[in-house]
Length: 173
Image 1 (cartoon, rainbow, N blue to C red):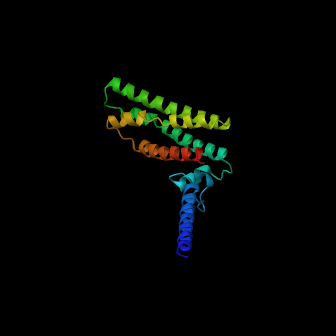
Image 2: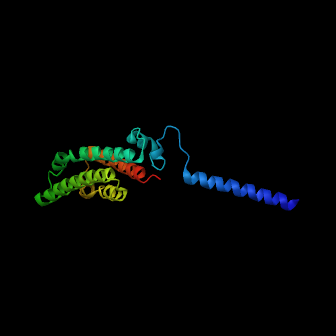
């Protein structure tokens, strides 16, 4: 009799632990959160970004496109970068503006290529392009020189969150 109780207790314990582990691996859908955003750090932002997508492809394209929009807004701040270099020696100024111009262009090119890869169904290339698009050369160059452009800092922060979101959506399994 005692062995039957111990056997049942062990079975119940095993079943409970198994259900907990399976539930934590599969993740339960949260109400109001897109099913493509279950692994995203910021689920509310992700849900807004995927904008009602009904499949993985559309959700990923929406997320990458949102990051692309912010990348273009950052690129539009190039004149502010030029203004921020007043007082620097001409070589440093040229180098900094060139770093930022190239960084912005590379980011936009890589994000466009990520969308193209998604449209071709090539998730591997899309992931590679998405990872490569997070080019922080400009931000690092500005920081090294003690230059802070508030609007750029804010957009870079938003861009980082969108990139995390796009990666989570792209590789959401």
